[in-house]
Length: 306
Image (tube, rainbow, N blue to C red; front, side, top):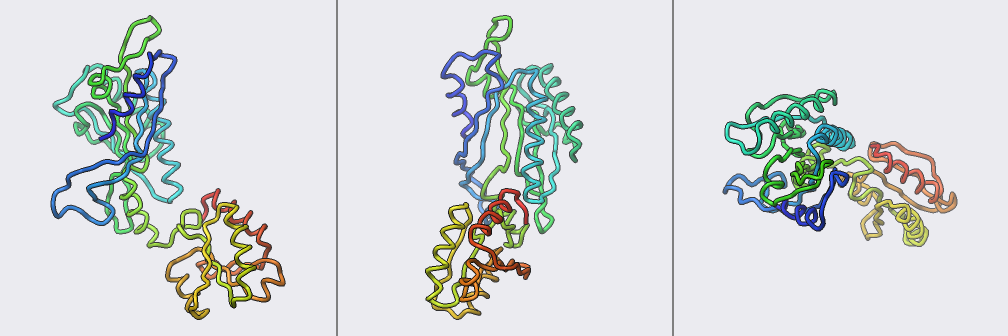
């Protein structure tokens, strides 16, 4: 775990109630000694990266921060067309902390869930011993459930064990509440889920290789190289297939690799001063200039469309 690192930042100076909420995030390495035989591809590994985050709040800020996190999760997962389900786990039989604070936190969390309009279910008594929590569940292409993101309202562990305090409106030193949050969770697991979810055919904005340009002959390479530079300047991920393979082999390879967009460039395209987009689904568009194509593709990527 790397949760304690945020407490070091918190304690760099005296905190006031006006400083909260304090939101800190990091992409940190985590290790789990998974049992032999349980490892599976990218979805269950011993070493992974997590988009960790900790938000230090006053008790009255729990509901608004949880509501904002729920909305963030729904927005992010909508980019990938992944339906999510929230699972709310409440106080277990053995728990640390003030029972009244547990009750208050659970009431606020449940209200945030109800107000969100999202699909959720109660998992009574299955919270962490230090926090009620919301786990985010997604289903992959095979119908398997995976827990990815999480929101935990930590009433004890970080505030108590690391002696965190802030000065309230009355000038008293009191403890904050720490909200642990991860949006993607394990990046390796999330990538594994996405590979199966899309069957490798990633949408344009997400594809590691967005465009492959295929010059028909060596004399077209200079024009293609200049065009690729224009696309790259717009943030588009481009490769040029200038291998010795035959033209049909180059096209077949791009199709097999499920590259979203292919540009075949020959004399006709040079005369037109651009290239004619050919999309993975077979859609063919008229030739356009490199500058116009770059602007259109950048807009498409920014909009996170297919």
